[in-house]
Length: 463
Ligand SMILES: Nc1ncnc2c1ncn2[C@@H]1O[C@H](COP(=O)(O)OP(=O)(O)O)[C@@H](O)[C@H]1O
Ligand SMILES: [Mg+2]
Image (tube, rainbow, N blue to C red; front, side, top):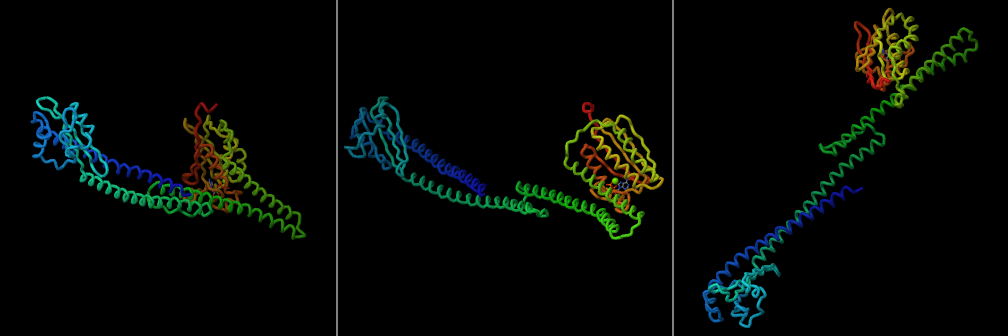
């Protein structure tokens, strides 16, 4: 549960440790090395000066060395030692009996200068051994040793200051990181809380986003998801309520008709027949509605349908046959202009539903003496079917809704004509399932035009 915090803090701590360690080590070693370098050059210069004073002496002995050194300032050295060619002590500031002869001095008798410097016990300890010569001949060696506490103190002070600064920086960075991760985790938690609210069923809840970073983006995405969920839920609710309402009306009529038959003892055969016929009609309407609902639910399921190459002209002609009696009754002319060779990938059933519903509407919502025109055209990309009528037309503001389930412009007129308000939703969903598109427009001078376009299969698919 707290893992992001722990991960983040561990990462920051490790990073800080490495950085501060480097900060503590690198400047100190490099300034120590700089001191070593400086000691080397200053001591080499001093030793050379002393050596050149001593090289004036033809033969080295304790007396003349003391004589020469007396005039020189040797106060800065902890030890000054002069040895002869074989390494025997001739002069030693540590006393005539002196300590041991340093190994460096013996090494130096082979002819090369030996310098050594180290940082120990809060002091820089440096020493140099330099060969002495007279007229090109090695006569002995000079050894100087020095102890510098002042520089060491500076270095240690520097080290302490860096350590203190590192601790302060580390603590500050850690506090800032803690605050940052706290805020970050809180924002993530807020999204999780919002998700729980929505998961609990409150689809109108929206997460409040601050800032414009990835976390806000996450919140934004979540809100959009919630919105879609809300819309779907709303559609589902409306659909259920519309469907129940749609089934309730014919059921109520059936009950009413049945009740009046039961309650009236002396109903004559004629009236009885009339009532029972009405009951039958209501039952037929119920059946039509449930059939359509089943068709729609199958379309919703996106069930895989075996698509074949269908000749649209043939299906249109077959579909018109059962519609002719209705057209005759409504005194509406059916006109066709159908191109040959318009094949699409579909099922005959799908296409039948589409054509039947469009032409049925065009006839139902027409005026006596009106006409319905069915035009089929095709180019290499698509096949277009246009059903236009000279009927009552659809008001502009209703056009966006007529493909919705149970939507009817004029409820009374639709019901009277036996409509359920589901026909156009079936048409719409079927066309979409076949990869096509449908549009509705206005016919001139009056009426409506429904235009359906299907993609034309490429010649390879057409087999
Ligand atoms: N050709 C048309 N002319 C005028 N109105 C139409 C036409 N086609 C559909 N409509 C309107 O759209 C509504 C929905 O159509 P549809 O889904 O087929 O339902 P219905 O079962 O009422 O025919 C109809 O009730 C009607 O008001
Ligand atoms: Mg209809």
